[in-house]
Length: 404
Ligand code: SF4
Ligand code: SF4
Image 1: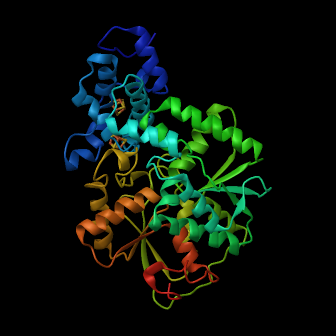
Image 2 (image 1 turned 90 degrees about the vertical axis):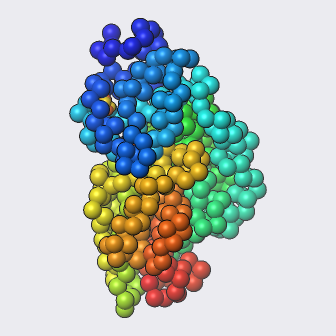
Image 3 (image 1 turned 135 degrees about the vertical axis):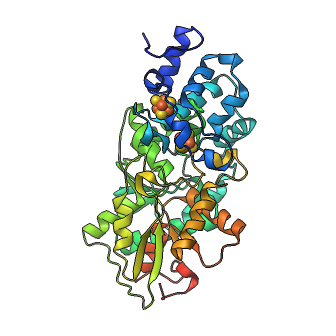
């Protein structure tokens, strides 16, 4: 028997909601801390109220669409989870309620397009798979199945955007320089991270099962993901489908290479670079991976590592999580602008963050704010710039070869 009191007495439905939200529905006590703490309250509307959303979901077809829209507005940043007295995993709660809404056909129409793109082209933007093949070839990595020690997984954002492909090239360059044998998929299948965040569970299942089958056949036991969202889904969701892999985020992997002395940043610039680190929610709050990226940046000579006033578990989200990149025209509105403005006040020259979606939202924000003198770089890009043997093409940090 559930301890919470749903407003509509449909016990079976309530139990389903409890299951979909990983038990969160049963423990939420309607205190409102999540609503008050959510950053959306600062920019436009109040943040989502988890208990109100749970009650609304219990109404089924009579759910209030205006209330339900908060579900799709949420960045699943998990910031409110840090102030929840009941320990509710608020991002999982949101994803659980999105799953219910999607299952019952109450989802934003754009979600259907995204799922169709995932089904037809294997990526949420509907980019032809041939472009993915071309990009994989460019990296000159081994094909999957040739007994490499690890699979490097770049994800759709990095594979298809010219700007973000620089992250993939930078990572491949550093791994090559460290003599790490790695493989990439020539037609990298989608990890399922976007499908999961959008609540498209049937398609998530299809993707995960297909990928597990392929990974088994290829004998892959280690995956290194450059995107925090792919890292999260491989680490947290794949084991629920019956198997687990050793999963690293790219910054964790670089940190290990440093610890084993396989990677050395020998470049010593004459001019100091002021770099502020932004914690992406999906490796930060969701996995407490705070130290490895900072250790990697800290190993770069001449790099002055700065911190935002709110960092680590208190870090402000960029606004692009929770698949908002697809759901909203300006996902970083408010969130990202605030971060960029603070970085400029700190006197930082670079915002470093190991997440392609954070990079996109910050760069959009810099353009919008017309903010000169500040750039956004993945930690992996900075690693390549500090790597003494990087070819000129990879050493494009600050736009000047050899001065990083
Ligand atoms: S802070 Fe936690 S207990 Fe309070 S309303 Fe939000 S989810 Fe429920
Ligand atoms: S997860 Fe983040 S965006 Fe969503 S309600 Fe909580 S604080 Fe707000």
